[in-house]
Image (cartoon, rainbow, N blue to C red; front, side, top):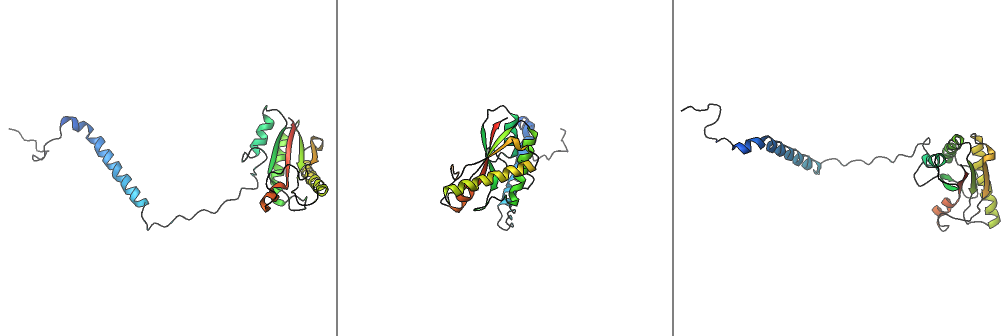
Length: 200
């Protein structure tokens, strides 16, 4: 009788069918152990809490521009490069005015520059700018202030190279509010300028 010296005579060999699946079983067991260790490490109470990152303000060179919400400059650009019929209105996302003012704020200039860049790429496009005011003040004063806001945005676009003959500036007064005039935030949203593409 010959003994196999490589095998412990006390341990019987695994059945033939099991031997074929043994590497898979060992691999699955190892994977389960690793997952168990990872989940236990992740749930320990002595791990330092993650420090939330500081909110990052959007870069001035990448403004959110008129168009569908959060569409960015690509919204206006895609519209002008597409085939959708005119007219279409685009609300400036950032171009708002201080109370009683028609001065463009420094933080709003990058958006106007980006809009000018898009309009310069589409020289056949004609647009209408509507300035708006909140509901404070008289109707006549608000119409005048809203016109001044449209005019100043028009001037900024023409200073950036857009042909003035392609831009019409109009007053929307306090009509067509986009937010409530009963809150400070709503009033600020209503002191705005909108751009309407009237010709592609």
